[in-house]
Image 1 (cartoon, rainbow, N blue to C red):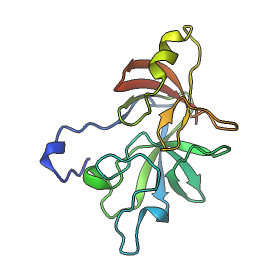
Image 2 (cartoon, rainbow, N blue to C red; image 1 turned 180 degrees about the vertical axis):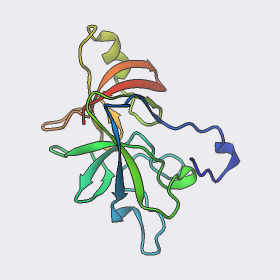
Image 3 (tube, rainbow, N blue to C red; image 1 turned 120 degrees about the vertical axis):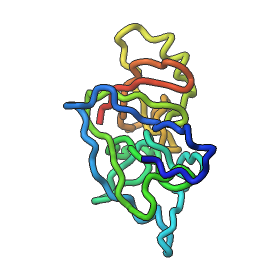
Image 4 (cartoon, rainbow, N blue to C red; image 1 turned 180 degrees about the horizontal axis):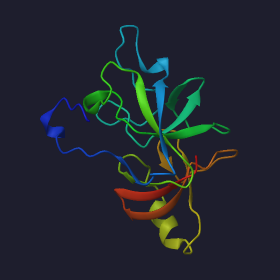
Length: 175
């Protein structure tokens, strides 16, 4: 449940929705990396990561650091763990004072992502120019969102199934 702090956010939607995940995906219970909290236990946004209303968004790509997760940076050879299931911090915070989050994992599961959980740059051209059945790989971007920009040694996080609009895509998760 969203713990909105402002009535203007009452119509905010969850940005990641499992479409085919009953047997393919697992909502993994994870713990946030300590870099998300300051000394008093308050939320600290991860530097460089995409933020909406002061917090991080569901659908962001996360990495596994020991027993904890943090937002991916899109660095080469970064090991991707899954997609964040919760709003973290800011006006749309799901967690409050807790450090436990959900991470969606599971190859061949299908998810719908709503903007701004993904980087739409170049997706329209890639999708319209693709031959039917061709995989369009998506990677973790520098801000932690899914997008087209690839680099040497970067792990494919998902394949684009459909770009419905600039505000909605459907992906086939690969991690």
